[in-house]
Length: 102
Image (cartoon, rainbow, N blue to C red):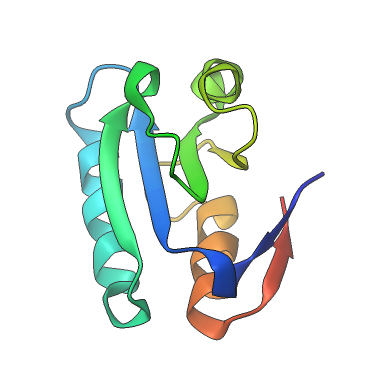
């Protein structure tokens, strides 16, 4: 289990396989939710996750691949593109400046 400090997150990446559709909507939703937090939210393919990401959100089926690309960055796996509890926990921790175990 990894602990994420919401106050330390400056760059959040939503990583997907093909780069279209549901993950783009998720990135847009998270970007809006974190607009007042000063956090940059990017959308990228799993193979192109930038090394300066502070946290990565990706579908559970891609989590192992993402961890292979950025082994030192917390990767949070989710199952639902909208309304997933894991994503909500991370967003809330960033908004409130708290920590969350993922």
